[in-house]
Image 1 (tube, rainbow, N blue to C red):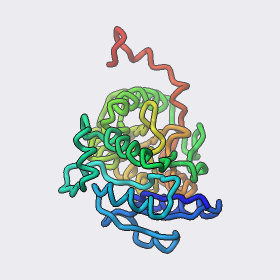
Image 2: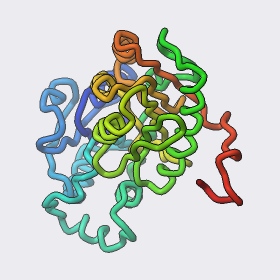
Image 3: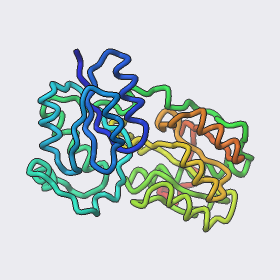
Amino acid sequence: MDTLCIVAGEGTLPFSVARNARNQGLAVYVVGFEGTTDPSLEQHVDGLCWIKLGQLGKLISYFKNHEVTRAVFIGRIAHKVVFTDLKLDFKMLQLAMKLKDWRTDSILRLIADEITANGIEVIDSTTFIPELLPKPGILTRCKPDKKQQEDIHFGFYIAKRLAGLDVGQTVVVRKKSVCALEAIEGTNKAILRGGELGKKDVVVVKVSKPNQDMRFDVPVIGEHTIDVLKQANAAVLAIEAYKTILIEPEKVIAKADSYNIALVSADSSAFEFSKYETNGRGV
């Protein structure tokens, strides 16, 4: 039997992956992080091992002991964890010496390469939840007006460049002016800061990175995000089609409609950004 191991962060997505994988006949094990992963996940899988962030050697040993053939990273782990008192084991210390920086992609790709070198395939994190990836379109009954559509277009231009630097994936704009850029503080705090500066009817855009590695750090939107948008007096949330995970889509869409917030899923490849360029450089 093919054996999958879920490297689980916080939230409900690890549960969805576990359920769908088991329905496909896979044995499913979990590696959870103390203080982050929901302990009740253990009731839905074949086994769970608790580790601390930085214990890469223990992670790989668990994979091998359970003959894991594929691993999937799913669930949020806050980026600011790099500033906590991490206890790196010897295996992780060896890898850390190879890091050129401590950006998310740099860390995760190095870890994925080490796991792959030990014979375990790290797969696309959306493999078992394709139904949570929205197609292009306006998902809510509430629709953006013409000026808001222009802000979506401008927001995608800015957000894609921000994401390309692996700094953040969310921008808040109003009247084609940038109110906030996400950094290590995370999406929700960036939205609130942008809402405070933009005053009302801000447009929030959340995108994937250019050449997004779908194995990890795929953008995620849930009901709590919509609550934050309401608090920030946002009028629109635009996300990237096919590359954004909507947790419990029906509930997210219903809540957005109840707050009169338009939820738009857009294909960024359909946008033309040349009008924002100056002498071949970004604004």
